Image (cartoon, rainbow, N blue to C red; front, side):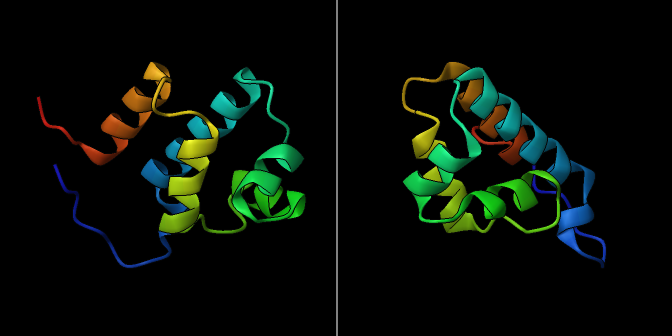
Length: 91
């Protein structure tokens, strides 16, 4: 299901904030530091901190790299988080 967007910054959207929160929890669960994640995706640690505090928007390419860093291919919990956020596949 694709949601209609209200005007305003998507960074303040509850769905976006929920996704970022879940990604941060997953990073912590996997014992990956902000610095380690940043190094894997070409950002610096302060960028990851700002993303996790909803001060910087995670763009779609960074999102893809975060998913790879959090091992989405083998990470069923992360797969469910992404499915819930995107609504795909709609089962």
